[in-house]
Amino acid sequence: MLTVAQVLKSNGTDGEIILGFRDIAPEDIDLQEPVFIEFDGLPVPFFIESFVKRGSSRALVRLTGVKNLRDADELAGKLVAVDYFADEEDGEDFIGWTIFNQDGEQIGKVVDYEDIPGNLCLVVDTKEGQALLPFHEDLVLSLDEESKTLTMEVPSGLLHL
Image (cartoon, rainbow, N blue to C red):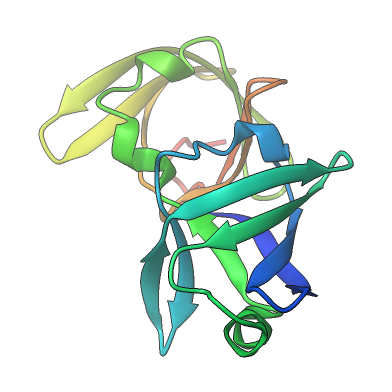
């Protein structure tokens, strides 16, 4: 899961909410796919019934099952995530992207990928040569499609940097 927004507040009495987006623009949300909000430690899927962009980083949204002010108020402050990796069959979309580690240091550029069953790896050109970097949602800290940058938690010693 990739956290993309936060429910800022309810709006009106019909269950609409205001979402504040981070790291992505509101128009980058796939309205055909569910968003997930965590309840009791579990991600609960919601489909978007209506979506109206408000400024550069907010949207007025109605979610399935959220029908009144009380339901909307219960969501206030919660984080909204998407299953970004559900559509990723392979790493081809990331070729040419720049990888940064958790400290903001540039690791290198993605030049290829290895589709090892159950363990997609990105082939990254680093200062030390090519390295395989496991591509798993738990390691992704942020991504920016516009600038084609990916920030990942790189386990110590993995790249020998």
